[in-house]
Length: 226
Image (cartoon, rainbow, N blue to C red):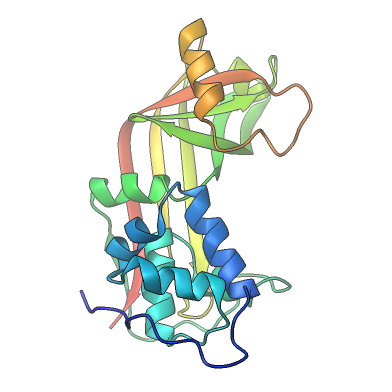
């Protein structure tokens, strides 16, 4: 892996956290990574990550790409370029290849996100619902409303998907888990999940019914160029 630049000495007038620094810190902290851990993932040292978070800086595109990859986000996510833009409208590259991801990489990418989509099929037909989730061992756990279409699908096969789109590179990736959907009923397990979840469900209300997907398959693909 190509090493990122060493920590530069901040020139006059460049101190102070910028939007890039705030986004970088927020994504890193959401994953529970220290600056040193993120540095190891992307070939930098912790001091350089600290510099990017705390000072106005203009890192090279290659540097941003490697940091974004380690965080499981896009360059646009770090720079804020996609804040007011619909994704997926970049022009496709001619040298595109669809790469199948190894299971280990799929598991790593699952740990970089906090929102995914659960797909179930019930008496009313198919439902596709975004949920805040957490990875619990090899399971994918999330909260929903008791009595919801997803809750009623306990005991059936379901699919879970996350993805990321990068308009800078006209690329992206997706990961899909397929398996049995179960209600979590053990009180100790519920307490553990509630204590370790990254966030409460963004949709609010009474979404306190824990469920988990037990994957029988985990697959992923990435768009690459060259």
